[in-house]
Amino acid sequence: MQNVALGFLWQDGDTGIMERARKWSDTIARVYIVDLRESGEDVDSLDDPRLHYAPFRDKTSLGQGLNRALRLAYEEGMAWLWILDGRTDITQDELLLWTRKAEPRIGLYLGTVGSRRLNPLSRPSCALLVSVAVARSLGGWNPVLPARQVFADFEERLKARGGTLEKGLKVRQIPSEAEGRGLWAFARRHFFGAGTKSR
Image 1 (cartoon, rainbow, N blue to C red):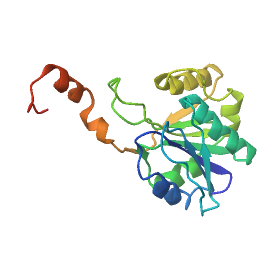
Image 2 (image 1 turned 180 degrees about the vertical axis):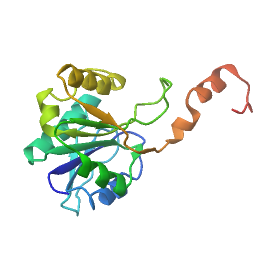
Image 3 (image 1 turned 45 degrees about the vertical axis):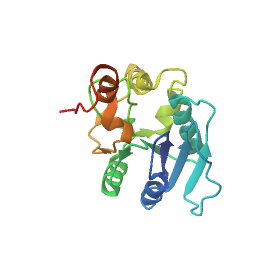
Image 4 (image 1 turned 60 degrees about the vertical axis):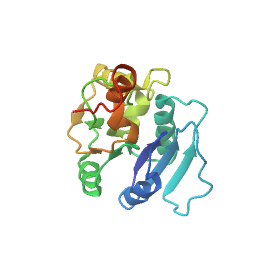
């Protein structure tokens, strides 16, 4: 769809990034792959002009990565920007539904996934659709806040300005190898004997 871009955050441990980016580019006019990994090879070239690779290493914060996608969308004249991270998946039908539904009076459509319990060993996942004009009017995302506070801070500033958000995006979280273990693996290594299984 025209005037809509998707910012795809590529972080350490993510897999299948290019395959999903190409899949979404069948629906969304432009996909920005914002590479936030601390290690791993850069992508030398992309054979699809709908994809834009933006390596952004050097201990980049989540807020900086989000603002990179926002700046690219603004410079290319996009009206709306999807933000997805590497552990969040969404169908093309859902992308189409919400992109067509988007209207200026609602600046942010939200679909946060993952456990509602705070797990210090996992990172936050995200799926949102934001008006580029609204995001820029708020100054983008705070680049100095910890990752878990970045989205909440943005929502609070949006509401303080009288903005409106709507929830309901249907997304799926893709677990990483480390995520299945989480706190249980830490506890088993340090407090339980060998052979103990989780329930």
